[in-house]
Length: 170
Image (cartoon, rainbow, N blue to C red; front, side, top):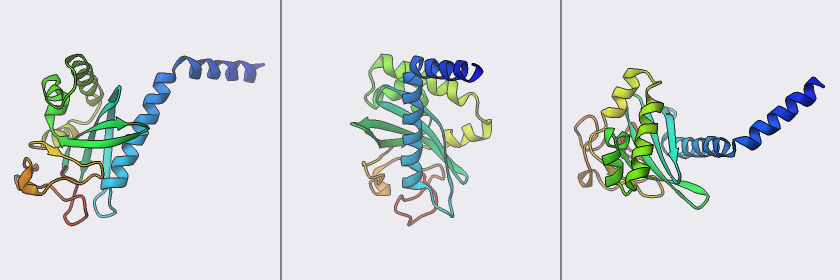
């Protein structure tokens, strides 16, 4: 009887929270995409938190002493990396400049701030260290360094995504 109750409770909980299950699945897909694109044995990538609003996600990332935030968009049944930036991806005004409607931008910015409030301040400092905006292609590549904002080290290029330089850097 106890097992039947537990199974019934679990079934009801799963039925009652399909959005939570979808969000968890989407968060895992975002993490998987970023790890598959940027993680390397000599420069491990950490992706947390992943905050989702509709077809838009903001993911914090760190790799070594670098970090930032990524904006991703759902295209059909998969996620694509749109850009990397810093604090602008936790501000409604910044999210609006990247094409989000004002109400969605405000909701997502508040959710990002709330999710990040649980993190170590040193990690948040890494996220904030990303300077500028780096537009990304669907394959995780970005334009040459001269075409985008500077990485946290002021070089204009935290790293390439083709493995030619250390770290993610956007």
